[in-house]
Structure formats: structure tokens, C-alpha cells
Length: 207
Image (tube, rainbow, N blue to C red; front, side, top):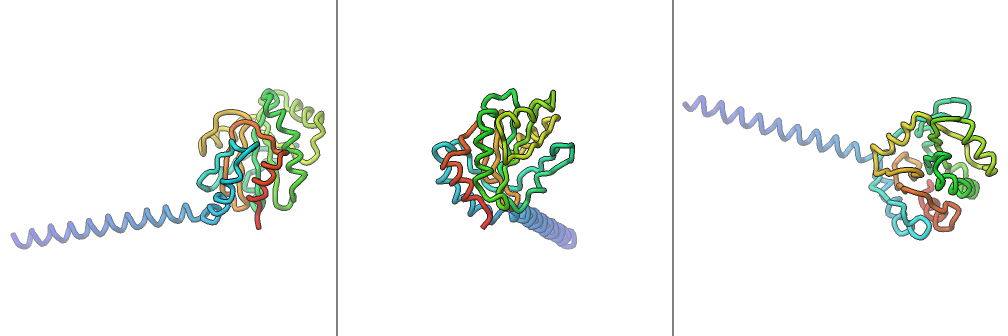
């Protein structure tokens, strides 16, 4: 009896050690997964009081790695969001059939022109599924000077963004730090040429 009792105690002890080891593994794994954006939390705190006025709809999020969106540059070259790492990026998903999208494009162009291109870039991704010449013609018509043309006719970029954060429709914009961590998301248009928008984005630039 004593031998059986001792065996049971040994088994329970080993099981307990296994549970503790597993808990330690998952705790370490979780901490490691979150560590990539620890520094970005300070940036997010700086942004919170600046999400006002024309950019009051910007939801500052708990920083996490942004989805590595895959899309195409003019000419068909595949691009990924990680290609822009090292810069603060404002990703904007738009379509020509979306009137608010069209209305905010000149303001996005001005914002891109007003800030240091070595530290900041607007990445507008068009999701028109038909007639790829139409969005190009629209950008030429409004005289865009500082925005490159990117597109994704599969609309996967919208679905990928929707899977990672709360996205409701177009236009949608995500602010991403130079370390690749998502800082904020805004559903709907904003006056990106406003002082409110400029101050918000400047606070997210790499230092």
C-alpha cells in the first residue's frame, strides 16, 4: 500500500511540474509575442490626446504587429507592408466608387507632401475590381503629386485588415509606426490636410 501511495504521489508531483512547465512556456511565448511592440506603447500614449478635431475618429489601439498586407505597385510589382518598415505609414484603402474616398485623396496627397518622406509615407491601396485605368485616371485628374499608385483587385487587403482590427467599410486608414506596429485605425474619411492630422502623424514619426 505504501509503495502504491508513493507512486501516486510521485505521479502527481510530476504532473504538477509538467503543468508548471507548460504554464511557463505559454507565459514566455506570450510575452515574446507582445515584446515586439513594447516601445510602440509610448508612442500610442502620445497619440491619444491628439486624436481630436478632424481626426477625432482615430481609434488609438494597443500596439500590435500590423498585418503584412500584400498588394501591387503600378506596373504589377508585388509589394508588402513590411517593405515600408523604418517609416511611419498611413495605409489608406479606397475605391473610386466610394465618394468619401475620392474626397479625402487630395488631403492625403497634401499630408504626404508636407512631411519628411524619409520618415513618413502614405500608402493608398485602391480596391476597384474593374477597369484598373479608372483609379489611375482619377489620380491624374486631381493632380496627385506625392502619392504612389497601389492596388489590390482581389480586395484581400481589406479582408486582412478586417481580420486584425475593427474595420467597417471604405475608406479605412491605419497608422503604423516605423517598427511595423499598428497604432491606430480610423473608419471613414478625415481631413488629412488639417493641423489636427499633421500633429497626430508627426507624433508618430520615428525619432
